[in-house]
Amino acid sequence: MIVANRYAESLMGLAVESNQLDAVRADIKTIQQVCKENREFTVFLNSPVIKTDKKLAVMSNLFKGKVSDLTLAFLNLITSKHRESIIPEIAEAFETQYKTNKNIFTAVVTSARGLDETTRQKVKELVKAQMKGEVELVEKVDANTIGGFILRVGDNQIDRTVARQLSNLKKELTNKAAN
Amino acid sequence: MAEAKTKAQSEADRIMTSAREQISNEKNAAVAELKKQVAILSIEIAEKILKSELSNDEKQKALVSNLMKDVNLN
Image (cartoon, rainbow over all chains, first blue to last red; front, side, top):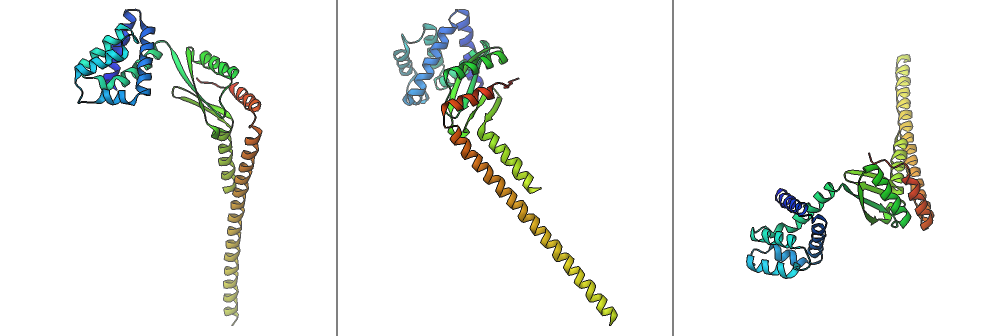
């Protein structure tokens, strides 16, 4: 979403300028957490019935002391511009831009039974070395993979699951049978 | 008379040839279908074996770290 991207960009700029990038990122995480855990909050943000001054008051109550003054001022600004409904998108866009700026890659690893600490470190090192950046690991568990793993970094997906190998083999064998 | 006989013979030959062809085609199709069934069955068996082989965490771990070796993201 273009508007969300622009707001995220300006917040990023302000944060860098005032040397508060990491603090603001933590704030963004807090906001995302609140949006995720509290459906009523997103309904509230989206509500066209609730007046702006009421929204401003709730926002202050909710986030004052929990986020930096910069982030709070930014939330107030967005709200007074009647853009509060896109706060979740702005947060998301901020997160993406932050990761791009800091060269952080998200690696999603799907395995049949989860990873142990050693394997986790191995994956991180592998991605770090090959992508030449920092890594944030997201783990998923899917028993249907049977064994092995799927590693996804950006648009790149590597499927090394037993399920995939079996399905390839099945394709190959049934094709052979047809000829 | 001789002409009628030859004609009947060639007609009989034609029918036989076409019957043989049909039998051969059907046989081939049956063999192909059978091969396919065997392939599917074998994969199902392999899947069951692999599932029970990999029901142990150590083996899962070993497999993952083995497969990790030649991963190339670029």
